Picture 1 (cartoon, rainbow, N blue to C red):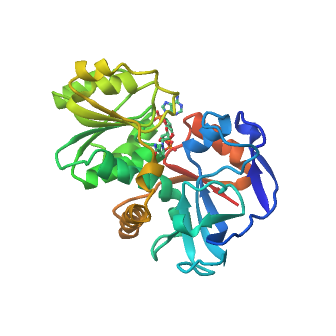
Picture 2 (cartoon, rainbow, N blue to C red):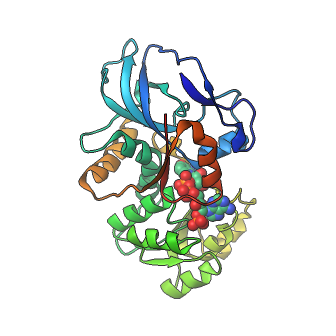
Picture 3 (tube, rainbow, N blue to C red):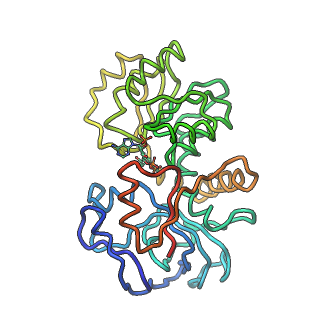
Length: 319
Ligand SMILES: NC(=O)c1ccc[n+]([C@@H]2O[C@H](COP(=O)([O-])OP(=O)(O)OC[C@H]3O[C@@H](n4cnc5c(N)ncnc54)[C@H](OP(=O)(O)O)[C@@H]3O)[C@@H](O)[C@H]2O)c1
């Protein structure tokens, strides 16, 4: 099959489009013909070596497609089913194997493209708004990079839960998208914590920060007493070590650095989050903004665009 292979970590140029052996189907696994792979920032961190993996590897943590074969002991999936996954490596390829325990059926009304686009970020937005900090009606919520893949979903889901959403973005085009997704207020990054204070008085209940280094301190300064900083990513770089006393000084704050794997480790939790997300997509309550589809061979260009802040919403690779 054709796949992207990383043999040495580095810039986007290390994403090599090449022939690669077909994956081996073991008991409990499902072989999938991939229709689309989602591109995520974690793919960038893994490609750079910031999140180390043993080399060589086929990148890509998310995708959807059609079941081509099932291994021994697999009861819940059959050849021809449309399925999707998140948090399983090897998605930048024509085929992959996914353990049945990590695989989800895609319901009618959700295309494979949409499923690939919403699995990882949709479930992340779900746990951040339902479990990390349970957003309640009337809450003030700050969403950084509100026009990004995560940002557009977080904004919509926080609105579904009745919050007032304040978003940050870098451009006018991104502001428009964030407003279309339901953001009540949209700010630029410069001076955002002062603007948040003006809008809210005492600050926001929760900050969802996937930007990291550039926004962390301003986010801490935007929280109300006992508010929560949910630092879930670092698109601008890692956050420097934090003195716990900072949390006291800013009002007995909570700081967490969550990741999806710990919120979908149990099968019933995985199924709960995926069913909610697919249900919202099928009913039209959650719009998935796929801004661009790249041929798999152009994975390097997709990474370049994501890192250079040129993308909005979700980008996909099509094998
Ligand atoms: N912890 C988890 O479970 C989890 C799961 C999924 C994703 N994430 C994290 O969520 C974050 C967003 O991921 P995504 O895939 O949805 O990406 P994305 O938000 O579509 O793209 C990143 C956005 O971050 C903003 N940004 C600000 N400063 C930046 C900089 N110096 N370099 C690059 N981007 C910058 C840009 O928006 P503006 O131009 O508007 O600033 C950019 O478009 C990432 O940090 C990712 O690791 C975490």
